[in-house]
Amino acid sequence: MPTIYQLKSRFQDLLRPLCRALAARGVTANQVTLAALGFSVLEGAALWLFPGAFLPLILLPLVLFIRMCLNAIDGMLAREHDQKSSLGAILNELGDVLSDAALYLPFAALPFVSAPLVVGLVVLAIIGEMTGVVGVQIGAGRRYDGPFGKSDRAALFGLCGFLMALGLTSPLLYQVLFGAGLALSALTIWNRARAALKELDPA
Image 1 (cartoon, rainbow, N blue to C red):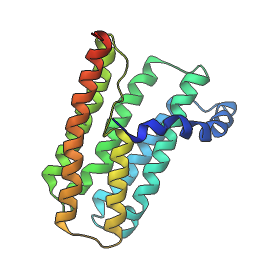
Image 2: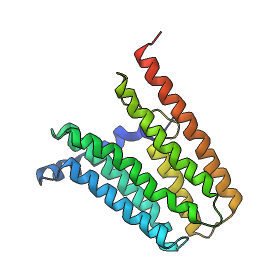
Image 3: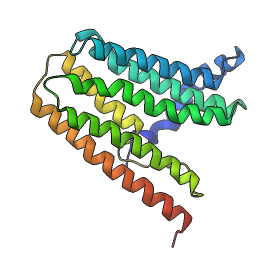
Image 4: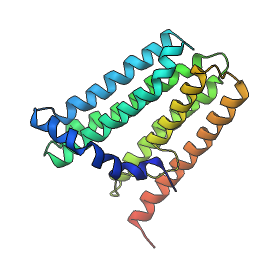
């Protein structure tokens, strides 16, 4: 199914000159991964400490975009500059789910947002990423199937943060948006599990 992840190769092409410059200066993939996590935790702390405040909310789309850039760069440094490592693989997977939790759970504290929907979205996000990793464990590839992967979650929460910063606080609006995200997250888990099994047995 379509997902923002399908634009990854074009996005990486735009970032490749910066990636080469960082590699030339001795920056490592693991350093970039940890920077993305730290950046996310700082933004998440601001969202949590100042619930509904304009500045953290309006900055969220930018923070999510920078995080997306850093995530792309750490992968390119690992693959294209001979920096692959077991530690890097662990940091990459853990960094993604920890960043998601740090950035998105604070939305549950907002009075006009359904806390169970937000918590459910974060839980299904973690299960979805775990399902993608389990593909490797059973002998298939790491699955990134959609329709609601990491980039799609970032787009949803970035949009919500932007709308909230503009003063749109209708509970119904966010019930619809987060409810749709919850349903798409469940479908993503199903698609990743099915795709991994189909990869092992195409028949």
